[in-house]
Length: 396
Image (cartoon, rainbow, N blue to C red):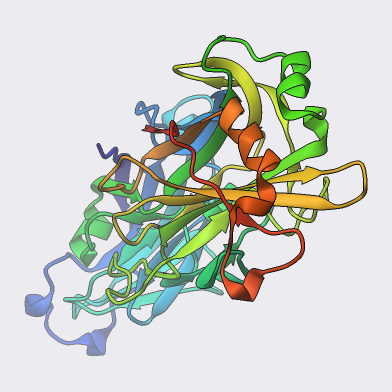
């Protein structure tokens, strides 16, 4: 399912101040020479377009709030940055939008200048568009978006790349939009309806440990089964490998031969919560099938926004037990999510549910579990366990 963002465009013809005597015949121009002011209205009725709202238990939805302060007009030659601002007089209270000046000469070539919130033309920036040239709008200042590769590796797969993200979300940078169609000078001057769509997807994650015989796993129950309090256990999830390393916004494409990479549920840029990069388990993590338990759930602004690359979803789930003697046992399991294709412009909640009894048995038999790859072997693991009754879900 894809949702599109529609911007209503209004154009106004001013005096033909850009025309020059030596520009040649007007016969080659498809647009009447002159200077035009074009306004873009960002007041949308579609509620599933931009911005992110949390609705509880690791569920998020895209909203209609445009978070970015700028939008960019690109072509082969470069780009200009156009301010987004309140336009209440033009399209109602709370409405946001932007405007620009487009100057068409006698040859049909054009030059575009940003206009600020005060209605002033910013002549320090300009974008030249030849008569038959094309341009597009984007929320990103560059033509190609590129992930930042971490020096850390996915623990059991040293060949897989791990990408990092800023824990303090800036939707102006992370939400990627592009106009669906390339735009001619006629399109830019005459206005009309602009189709702008998100070219990234959103992801959140939960991992619940539940009692399959009881719809509510209490703190006392957890301690009785696991032999220790839940706040001595911590978790980290790696989700991939379908995330793009680079995304060509201009051509809406990734390199076809890219393998793809992973993101971690807890960013390495965060302070240590227990073990490095691990989150202490919390209660009240709800499984759709098995009720309330313990585990990890995406909260606040820890969701992920990123371009996607290939059509498989895989997760590695690491659980650590910080034992009273000061040592730590780490086990992990793998989950393949029941989905064959992920689409741009959707927000996905990826989830797993592990039987608390199987988890307890894995830690109780830690020394008998298979170690991970030799490059990650250590006195404390991680060790692979494969729960027989693992439940995986993905929702959007």
